Image 1 (cartoon, rainbow, N blue to C red):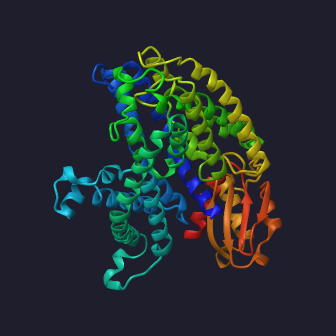
Image 2 (cartoon, rainbow, N blue to C red):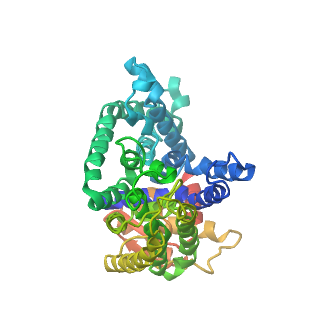
Image 3 (tube, rainbow, N blue to C red):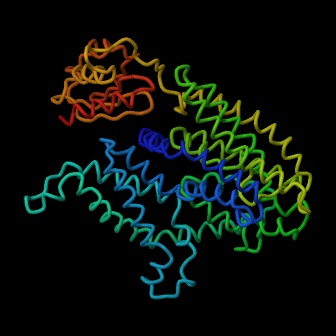
Length: 480
């Protein structure tokens, strides 16, 4: 299970890498026009819409990324199948479709179906698509149906599979959603402790997308709390209204950027430059705009322990802010933009104490993350084996990568021995029929930093940050 979750985490890195840029665009646009969200400024509208084109389609991006990353051949038809899977479930379980299926007015449809477009559904769609690809991409149909054989069959089988998945979700999704709403209404009665519990479960549910159900209870007028609406309209009790928002500022502006620094410092030397670019962009997006997905999805699957700690610390932050009646609010998310805009509102109470709290949480996040990563050797970005890329191996008339690929593949035993080829950030991950047929000396002669034997049929070749190019060349060899 751990290995499977890590594969999902690696698959998400491709779509996650684009999120910081989108978050910054939206943050700048919102700063230019905080009340109209672009209605009062063409420049703001342009930036917000551009960013939202990405942020607003996170589920779809995840469906594509997971399908491509989890497919054994990393083929484009797998990504297409991920898109097909997501579109099927999103369309079948949209409020309009559910209203038609139940023969009721759309206004009477369970609110749960209004939240069906979420990260969990995207990831689930990608997983189903990858399973269908791995199972059916090489299936040969009778001659009369030969056109639909192989990779063309994958989207078809994916669509059929998602009919079944959608049927199951049709019954269980409202139950899950309603249960969360009821749970939220219960903990809302517990004061500062309830705020802490809300913060904990808010983060814990991010991977599933179900945090939206919980947020609706506290932020909007589902159960009469309406924390965001009341804060910005100046209604409520000073020091109380805003308690379900304030504690996020220390985490998003300080805690998570500090976690980025910890992940950078614990990355392997050869990976620091690559990790720095991702963590710097993600950390700045979190601080400036309050968008945390680029950071959280970078470690939630590869290091679930860290994500649990992050959820606990978020709950503690909300509980502390609520207990001391420090309040600030947000219209977009808990970043610098909203902090500045909300700190002068009537409902804001000692908001600058949240900055002090944030500095304390930055220290806590940094040292806790750094300790746990090194103590348990958690596979956060850049924690692969030393990966100086191979130097000096160029066969006459060939590029370095094609020459490396050819010799590595030959050393593995070629078509007769290689079952599957995959890769992560720095390593080729291969399944072979007979480990005795592997010539490690021939592989190491290409200049790769090392080889790991991880099972009776599983071997990893550490290539470095250029592993994708070597993997692509091996894929070409296997297709010949």
